[in-house]
Amino acid sequence: MEDILPQDMWVWRRIEDVARKQLESYGYREIRTPILEETRLFTRAIGEATDIVSKEMYTFTDRKGRQLTLRPEGTAPIARAYVEHSMDKISPIAMLYYIGSMFRSERPQKGRSRQFHQIGVEIIGTTLPVADINVIIQLRNMLKSFGLRDFIIKLNSLGCSKDKDAFAEKLCGYLRDKEKLLCEDCRVRVKKNVLRVLDCKNENCKKVLSKAPNIGDSLCGMCNKHFKEVKDMLEKLQIEFEEAKNLVRGLDYYTGTVFEVTHPALGSQDAIGAGGRYDNLVKEFGGPDVGAVGYALGIERIIMALGKIEEQIPKTVFIATMGYEPKIMGLQLAEEIRKKLKGITVFTDVKGSSLKSQFRNADRNGARVVIIIGEDELKSKKTTIRDMKSREQVSVGMDTVINEIEKRLGE
Ligand code: HAM
Image (cartoon, rainbow, N blue to C red; front, top):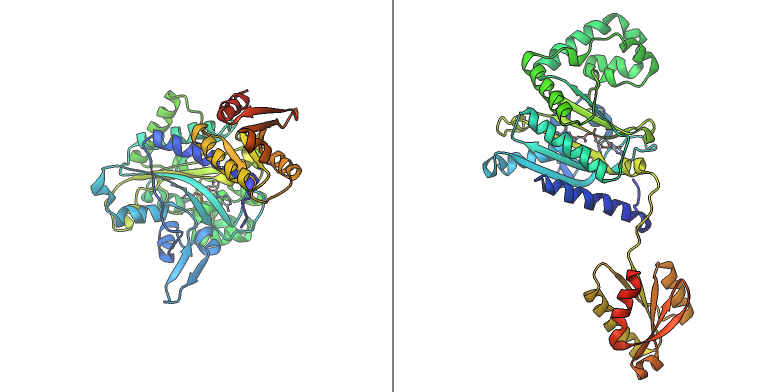
């Protein structure tokens, strides 16, 4: 779990601000669910045999003996909230988004941490392909607004529960006489959650699977039609994607369309985000029988994929003061500048330092100009303005100082 330090916060803020604006322009509304949930919520939704539930959850018993878990993802809590607050009665379609921390006790490596942050969306209340498209278009446009290029959207369909079960049987049949060739983990997966074998990165397993049946080729008529429509709409809307017939996901609630967004700058953990349909989850939680689709992006991975970007430092003014009355004057002037000139950062001295050290502080905080107020300035109702680049100083009347600052910062 990592600290996010002040010097890095601006990138996070920029991503979150762009995301919020963009998501709201598509009609999504923000939701915040608790960081802790009852463990069984995740066990039921994500599945006992998945890596997340079997190995990665931070689970503990509280003082009253309740089993609780730090949320490893946001979809199950939102489906729970949807049911708990009868959101289907409020509107036929719930379009929700969230930004927050998730927790998975994985082995930390580049692009993988134990506390990480997701931006996610969920549309609950429809099984139509147009909802899948809505989610994918918004995702693609948001990544572009962050300044990301070269990402790849990989798309597949897992089919309905029946298709998934039938395919699992087919895959087990294919692997029956090949188990010895699989890695240890995959031998367990064959027994507990065979679809996960398709996701294994082990070279031997990949070789065995190169001739395995494809899940995307095993869909029933309805699921085939849905998937065809999704692909057709994406093509007509000129949204680039790659069909990945063996793409499966690490969470059991998915049915139908699934997708993953990868970026070449990320190395082995190359998924910036992923999502898909989970048409049975709300019903399984005791809610109405409604379809749902969504995705989540990892903010740490977006930042990694963006690489080095220039920070845009806000225009900054420092008010340097010497003496008791000048300090009060400085505080008043700072308030006036903040009120009149929007988007400007104004610092005042809070240390009682020498003028030289106040200049140094102004420099460290990126101030372009310093306003100096001392006893002399107070008497003459004037201030001195110092340009931090050229180090030139000019005397300006107290009544025109804000105009002068505006002019200089605008240059
Ligand atoms: P997920 O694929 O488990 O899906 O996670 C989505 C994204 O979260 C990943 O693609 C990755 O960028 C990021 N992520 C996951 N684990 C870590 C980690 N340990 N460190 C850093 N980043 C990580 C879900 O969570 C689903 N709830 C997505 C969804 C929403 N499906 C439907 N609606």
